[in-house]
Length: 172
Image 1 (cartoon, rainbow, N blue to C red):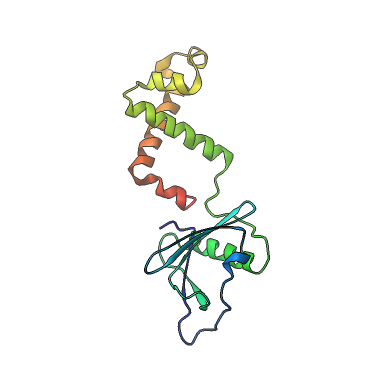
Image 2: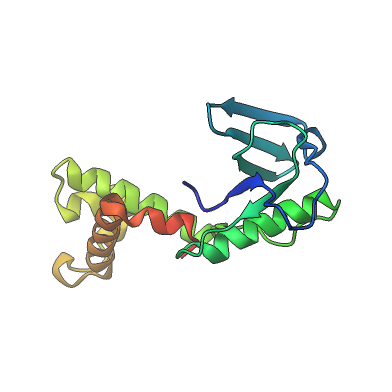
């Protein structure tokens, strides 16, 4: 499960009772799917998205956030904090797992390099597709910085393919 999904469950006996969550008050677009054990919701508010997994099917039940003590704890806690801020009418200051423009651009290059590699293209052919033939002509291929960069992009794409994509969910 995505660490940005806020897990909610009925408040255990003995803990302070919170008012029920007004899902409609979180934002206008609500996508909902319910199975026999839980409700999955996606609520959009301006530029923010809130993903909720509610382990209670009664609508007006007091709920508490459940945050497993796993490797994704910081991301889960930040997502819960964003939800709490929104419920209080405050704008949240951070978006978990946001990627910088440079990181997004590098990921796009990695995936394109991976596609070329999986299609059995040589590193030089991949580099030509990514950077253009004119940039490759500026220096000898064997000592080219673009050659090294292309190899790193292919290796990065392979690492993403082999389970590394989960790091993206942790903003690692």
